[in-house]
Length: 317
Image 1 (cartoon, rainbow, N blue to C red):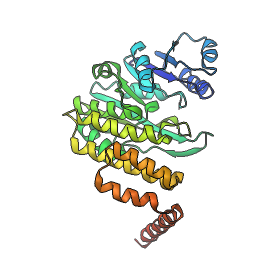
Image 2: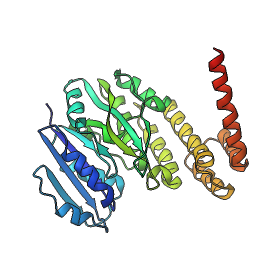
Image 3: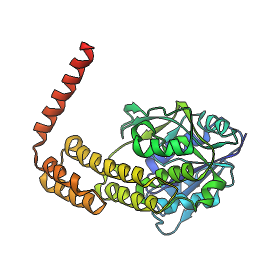
């Protein structure tokens, strides 16, 4: 069984970090190392880590804030395992996660392997389970599926393992904001001969809450723009698929902010300006302006009517 390094980059999340650490230490895989990089935290993280007495755990403190991706790479530089799994400090693993993913990666032709996650909110209420992708698919098929049909390929870092050697060959995680993991997955699939494996069972809990990067429009929209430019510079990745992913992501985020969050016109126009600077095409900016100006109750009513019509059509069939 290949050795697994669980990387836990953390910053000012001592409350959640205790759960992440506990879940990593509870793994039923014998050959395991856990690396925690404290990214200049100012809360109780240092005290929490100082109280650990586990030979599998190595900790390091960064004296200056390296940024999110910089801290990921700081963990990666310390890893010695054959495989690496990045566990965010607010997520948790189920006890069999590392063993299950390591067993899948025993296949020499596997590029990466991922499982499903249970998505929970900040109060640990269950929201949904991520969808299962194909059990096995070639790298190019995964790339097209990830970019063109992202909702059907939804790897989460806390349930994904990479080969450390290939990750280092790519230069680690690129500085493209909150979509750095997607960028690595796509580039691995585009450059390596082999298959991407999906384990069709839940391997961890992914926490979606107010502190998540997806709730920050500047970071989220900037991330779509950054990943767009990074992947367009790679000739092995289909450019049309990259543009489709970025456009769909930018537009979907604007819809979610208006309908799901309920932002007003002023904040909506600010979101639209950010999306335009991140590369939202002109043909999408005009309907986006309409989205910003239409009252939210009307949009919610239209959504209710559409869903009711879809249910009626399904019953008719």
